[in-house]
Length: 154
Image (tube, rainbow, N blue to C red; front, side):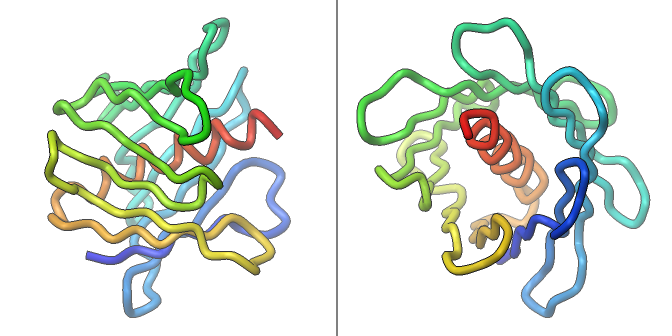
């Protein structure tokens, strides 16, 4: 499954549209006024997930909720050169390249998804190649958390 993750232009809060291969909007992401980042994922106006930044932590950390139930978290690991994220969810982990444009999500040694940043766009745009479509919402939540963490640094 392939999704295109595009930040909306001229938005006061973080907001994104997630498109399928045919250009149809599959998910909408709306930022909410809160301390730190708080992103809500919708599909056909139905709330599916929330990505919420945990404040007052030494390293950036985000919690993921589905149907208002905590399912896991992601935190940036201290590393030199290559960004790494620790995921408290199904044994997954993420590794990125030095430029923080390309990422791989792994379950052990098996690739779950590949994420690539498209360059030369006005807003943040990523292509998500997800092996199993049932993992799409989970992968999207982690990519949103990574993008929010990067925005917090800038």
